[in-house]
Image (cartoon, rainbow, N blue to C red; front, top):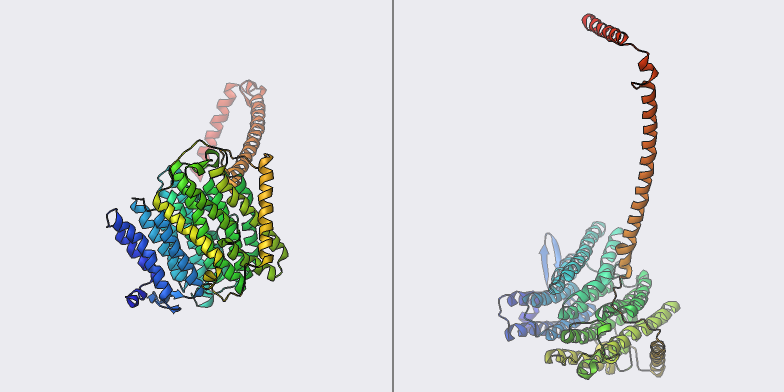
Length: 568
């Protein structure tokens, strides 16, 4: 049985299941397919040895559909786990579009992570875009439609840039192998930009904050796991050690903090937090050492879990109350205590409290940065760590469950949602207490002990002072109030700034045109008046010419014309 399973590309397991769903009636059978597919895929990957397992010919190219090594394996395993947890959270759904999209989306991300060449990568890359957009459109509102269109345009554009870069790379090198590259040509820069668009680099990031909160409650959980982490994997595979990524990642870790603090929609807060956490991973890729890449891979693994847990808890609240706005929530711990506990576990994990998953993964990246003597980068990442505690570790659970009493008394989340959150919360704690289980599947051997007195004391000092700062700021009324507002982020550049500039320039040009028109009209009227005065019917010249003279002049001109015609 395993031999037969090993012959099937993992992505095709998901695609086949998605196709089967189209013909299955809603019910247990369909849900078992949704949950069974990622389990079977994980068993396949876990029991399969390292190497290349599936090659096909495509227009003269040899495509590698199953390249399994230590880097791709950890990403594929967490993708399978995320697909299982996301589908369990969505057990109640009776929406074929979302169910098929979820499987096709997960399969495309897994196929991309296993691709050994960049042509296969491109097909799966675009597959993630096409499959995932239906999770946004499935909300069936006008806003989600236009947000989905923007998301699709950016994701497809990323694929177009990628295939252009691949074509130029093949022209330059004669190879399509997906391997380590250097930023030394237009081809590699295009591939790099393509990865950056999907990774939500600064100024290329707003699709993330717009699209994830616009998706359905369950769709957001699934979206949070795949697209951006696939981009992190692609950067780790193709551009490990590229120094510019260190600075890009640092900016990614810093700027979302301020937007998240003023954001009212808690799902958008989590989207900003996602961007912040991606920054740590990108810095690790930029450092490029074995310790740093282990930090990136482990952080991606843990992040998918605790970010899914936070999206699940906010999604469960939204499922029961119909809103995820902080200004409309508060006091929900009274009737949703289990969801509140799971949210606190996710908050502790993302904040890197000891005994939680974030503590044993984020420290790998910070240690790698310190080891390479990037002092200012390390300080910036420490500040970003305190920031994520504020906007995700405190703001999310506090304003949802413990702040002012909103007067809402919703029922606890459904059993399947609690089960999905419970499993995820257990994994966050288990990984935090027993880090060696995660360290054992990282790309490189790990000789690192997170639980040292120095590390624990330093992290607790950072977290406790951050908590104290939040308490003082909140008690003194200095914390940004939770109000109903729209945060445009850098979208303000083309939604407000550019239209304002165009409007101002149009106003100036219109005013100049009017002045020029008035000036020309005045000159024309002046010339016309003078011409009328000198040659008009009342002018002296007209009065001095008798009618007989006019007749003689015309007759002379006519005679002259006839003479010329006759003798020419």
